Amino acid sequence: MNKLPKLAGKKAGGNVGRSMLAASMSVAAIAASVTGAYFTDSDAVGSNTIATGNVSLSTNPATNVVSMSNMAPGDVQYGSVTVTNDGSLQLRYALKSVTTEDLLAAQLDLTVWDEVAEGADADSTCSTTVPGTVLYAAAALGATTTGVQIFGNPATGGQSGDRVLAANTSEVLCLKVALPTDTGNTFESKTTTATFTFDSEQTVNNA
Ligand SMILES: [Ca+2]
Ligand SMILES: [Ca+2]
View 1 (tube, protein in one colour):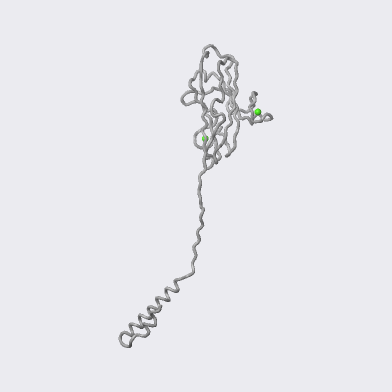
View 2: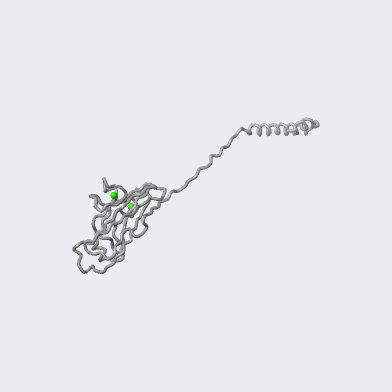
C-alpha cells in the first residue's frame, strides 16, 4: 500500500503512462483484495459417536440343569434354568438338545415350559405340576448328531417358537424328565448326557 505515493511521484516521460497504468492496476488489485475479504465463520459440530450394541445370552445354572442317577421306570426329575439377556440389544433364542446316545434319550420324556405359564403359581420357581401350555411336550430328551430342536429355530429371522427377551431381562424355563413306567429291560444300565444349546440373535432389522 505504501508504494502508491512513490508511483505518483515518478518523472514525466514515457514512464509516466506505464507508471500511471501500473498505479491504477495496483489500485485495482488492492480493491479486488479488499472486496474478497468477506466476514466468514466456521463452526465444528463434534461428538458424532456411533457405538454398536451386542447380543449376549447366559444361563443359570450354566451346566447340569437336570440330572439323575440310578433312575427307574416311573421316576421323574425336575430342573429349572434362568435365561438372561446380558446384552444391550433385544434378542430371540431357540433351544436345541444334543445327547451322547439315542436309545435312552428317545425313551425319556422331556417336557419344557415357561414358568410364567404356571399362572397363579408364577413365582419364578418351577412347580411340579406341568401347566396347560408348554414349550416342548413330553418327547425325546434329545438325539445325537443334529440333536432335537426343543423350541424355536436358530435360522436367521423370527420363526415359530423363537423366544424374545428384551435387554437386561430374564425368564425361567422349567424342565421335567420322566422315564415311563412301560420302560423295559432294554433300557437298563444306560446313560445319556444332554447338552442344551441356546442360539440367540438380534431382533432389530432381523424380522
Ligand atoms: Ca412357579
Ligand atoms: Ca430364529
